[in-house]
Image 1: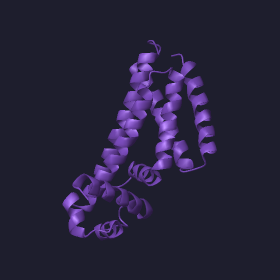
Image 2: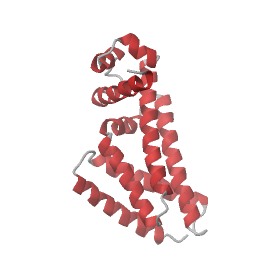
Image 3: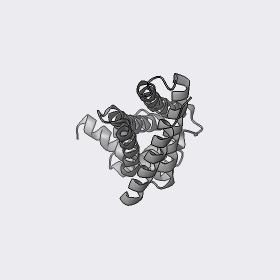
Length: 192
């Protein structure tokens, strides 16, 4: 296997192992064994368990951020952008349950570098949502109020997604529909 392919394979295995046992419950030996490689091969790609975990958090965070950005940048109406962003969030959770679990654990975890990395992605997503709100509200909302609305929207999606990750597609569709109605009615009726 070539370097990039091996690295991707090691991240996939690490996601499953860390997702099942958490950061402290896993050793580099566990990841190497599960990946079917030796520890030296694992260390060729990641200098430490923390480096491996940070790379995993970065990869999952960036994928989630890319999906949300794509949904927000879609040349559709604002209601469709809201729906697409909620759908992107829930699809990520369903497809990457272990990765999402790790991201959510690290928002309140003890390791500052893990919290900082996950927090930075959350802040970038919130900023993009806020920018869209300011741009589309036609001066009805100032930056501070748009930031508050964005924080609420991101928090709403996170909380709902955490409730039943990997649930049935019908349940997910119903949750997205409910969240879109709530968000749309709230945003369009917000006059400050």
